[in-house]
Length: 193
Image (cartoon, rainbow, N blue to C red; front, side, top):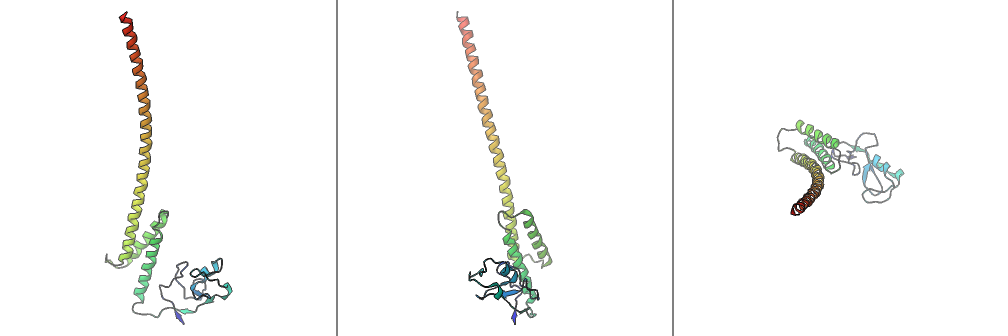
């Protein structure tokens, strides 16, 4: 019988394989030899392997009968590393530019809760701590960029209005100056006679 490692994931949905009798998340093999969960295989259209693109017949998919891993001294540590790896993947998935704020908050909250339940050693789980710190810096830079862009637009609008007002004031002062000069010439002309 095959043994499923706790960190074994379906390569399509990245969900861990189930060792229960429920077929949805249990590993299934296709003709090319690749293994995926039944849910992902059922949803493929056309029926082609996601890795090698070789066609397969959906009715020929074989459920693999698996057992859980034997309890080893390092099993708890491996499970912990699997959790850390899964959280690290979630952080990576929300590190894009167009990810909604609530998804980022959910992931960071989950990571913070998980880290607080672990060792208080700040050097433990360094990759995930670094990834969260980088995500938070990235998000802060995005927010600052949005604020700077809005400030730049506001300043451009103000500059445009100021230029228009300055041009209007210049035309007005020029008209007043010409009016006064013509009045001065009229008065000088009247006194010269």
